Image 1 (cartoon, helix red, strand yellow):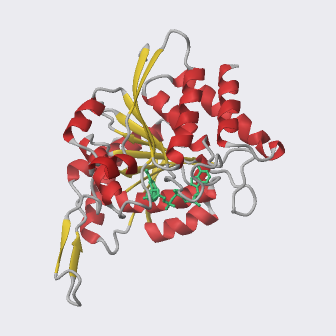
Image 2 (cartoon, rainbow, N blue to C red):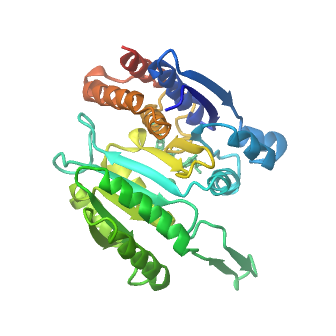
Image 3 (cartoon, rainbow, N blue to C red):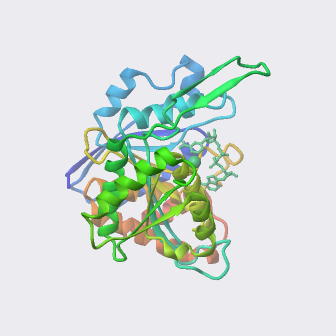
Length: 347
Ligand code: NAI
Ligand code: MG
């Protein structure tokens, strides 16, 4: 645990600005006096793109690399063509900083409504591969715009890339009380990548005899996430499947307003980045309606990554307490929720 935190802050677009302000409020409130918090704000996103045409330069990456961690709000705006900021900023950063573990916990907290019948016990973590699969930009197009247009989007899977994320997932499963790990893929149809994933998974499993494993096709997994979410403990999966099932996981476990994530470089050669799962929500931006809870929970993940477990626990407890009372409190603004959480962690 370090006695100082040098944090890069990227509020980004839309509600990113609003929720990050609350995340920082809670972070300042939870840190003890003797931990020095330094923050530097970066203006990436639509504003920078319109002003300079840039999304993320090599100089930006060099500057970001100096920080201990990155807190991100959201990037994306209707004024920018789709894909420019997603590829040019988000994916570029995740690849450049080798964020190969995309961690997305799903926990249904008390007092939080789920669209599922009953109040199932939901407490699982998705470990999504973050640097390979169909998201590497390995593809192309010819005869564009004609009726003979051809497009390829190749999924890249390496034994090295799969093994490191599978190992990370086994270690996380081993550290949890239930010690269960599910591999989710589609190895009956995507046989080349599927066999690589399955073989690596089975080989690594032999080193973790205390972890119970199962394999599930991704389509079946979407059923079980709705009908039996309590069966999951840790899930490891490919980049694309992980992207999709974590949105479903967020929907069943309290919604996008409370879904946190970490883009983690476990070897710590680069700063890891923590962000809410949601985007910039242009439909509610600037109105004080955004729920900052997902960002606050992302701050807890950030603190845990930096070894500040006690402070992370205090944030988690404050969020749990706030959610329990939320229904009775009526509608609150983004800042009011942030103030309430900051008061709880400080008190
Ligand atoms: P979105 O997550 O921004 O919004 C989806 C829906 O959820 C909207 O109705 C929104 O109002 C609501 N919502 C989202 N966050 C909320 C919060 N904290 N509190 C209350 N309601 C919330 O997804 P959408 O609309 O598909 O994308 C909007 C933009 O965000 C796009 O440009 C997209 O590319 C970008 N995006 C960026 C991400 C990132 O920075 N990592 C992740 C996802 C989307
Ligand atoms: Mg997504």
